[in-house]
Length: 69
Image 1 (tube, rainbow, N blue to C red):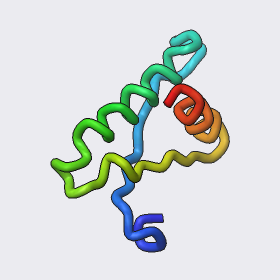
Image 2 (image 1 turned 60 degrees about the vertical axis):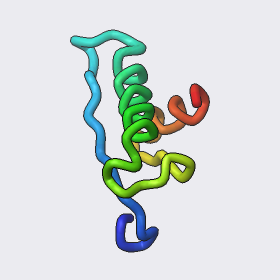
Image 3 (image 1 turned 60 degrees about the horizontal axis):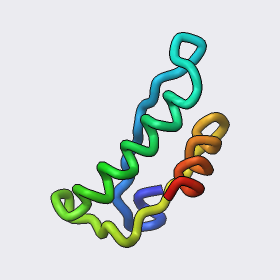
């Protein structure tokens, strides 16, 4: 993805169930999104050009971030 888009890619981790109940995972990924936006300039990124993506459960997290944002 990095090579195809010429973008900085950030992979996040999140708390998973059943140990951590909903919405722990959604809160974690949204917090990571906010961190990327707030710190983009520090790693030569552009806070106004942030995309989210995922596969399987991570796609659900990406959709949740898009809705909350």
